[in-house]
Image (cartoon, rainbow, N blue to C red; front, side, top):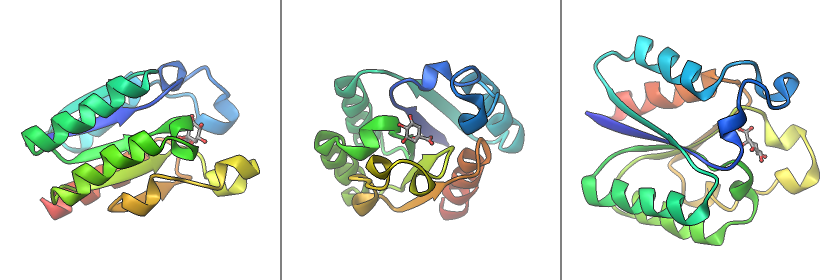
Length: 143
Ligand code: DQA
């Protein structure tokens, strides 16, 4: 069973980017942690700084019927195009879990809005790398 773990802009810098907020684990470290906890899952972890690429991956999720764990990063707060793509996933009956390492509600005002949450299956935020693990636990529970 394949699960897509999609990551938006600047998450390629995880590990060194504002570690006091995002922790010291890189995306590769997070992938290893997920694989250790769920050795039965085929993980497909991807990152892009490009909105169009991220939208294309969501279409792929629909076509290949793959559950999605999505950290939309800054796109969370303003990308209606990504929101529409996320809606395609959940309307297809596939789980789409929005994750954030930090708790955006405890940060700047512009981070308090998510245009994605309204079409997501659920949201997990504020638990660092474990936000991803909790999301994967839930995907497996639903599978
Ligand atoms: C983030 C929160 C966003 O506000 C921010 O733009 C990110 C990361 C998080 O995982 O906490 O890039 O999605």
